[in-house]
Image (tube, rainbow, N blue to C red; front, side, top):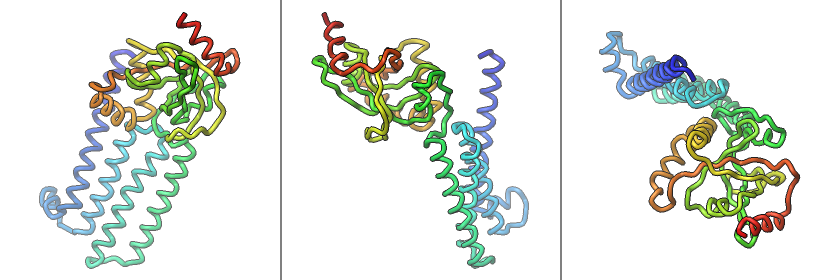
Amino acid sequence: MSNSSALARVYLVAVTALTGATFIGIGIWCLVDPTSFAEVVQFPAHLHFLHDVGAFQLGLGVTLLLALIWADSLATALAGFAVANTVHTVNHVVDLELGGSTLQAWLLAAISVQLVIAFVLRLRQLGYVLGRVAPATTPTLAPYVRQKTINLTTFRKDGTPGTSPVSIVVDGDRAYFRSFERAIKVRRLRRNPNVEFGPATGSGKSTGPVQAGTVRLLEGAEYRKAARLLRRKYPLLHGVAVPTAHRLMRSKFGRTVHAELIPSTSGHPTRADSALRAEATRT
């Protein structure tokens, strides 16, 4: 990326984030203390209309901030509008003594329900992945582009398998995941890079066929690339939650490890084959 492109990206992110945060702040102000807001902007105070201004400002701000981390425009728009309309609905309920009708509140509530249903349906279409994903250049990894979790099977010294769920991100003909330096699977991978992997739920329940592969632990630029790809696909989970947890637990589990997962192109080896390879590696 050139310096001009990098500066342009910094400018876009900074302006979008600042504007989004400002709109959210104004929205909260209008909702919490509409009278003081009216005094500052020097317009007559109408509590309900100011509450509605707050609702729409809040929705606009949320939409801008989500646009920074979500790749899908439809999901972003649905989420932002759902926030605005839901707060708008609450305003109509709270301000019934100022005007309006119960029917209006119910109609607005029905719209919010429809928006939430549409958002959930869109999430399902996206495989519940709202971050940025890269295309796969091999059919083997194509099903994993929007897959959130895989079961990764590594092998003990005697060839006995051990399986654990990890988040996966695909980039071309490679996939990546992260773990702790002192995790059992990482210690196994240092002895034997042969693995088996397949799609799974977040709790580790298998949802598809298992295939063979090898793993390579990363350093330097490749390490940073894997971290960046995970952050883009999972902006909250691997952009905030997991890195924070890793920092807090570093003294116990060691530093974060990033690894490259390479699907096998020579057929699916048996677990006995993997054990034999591990034995050969040790000798």
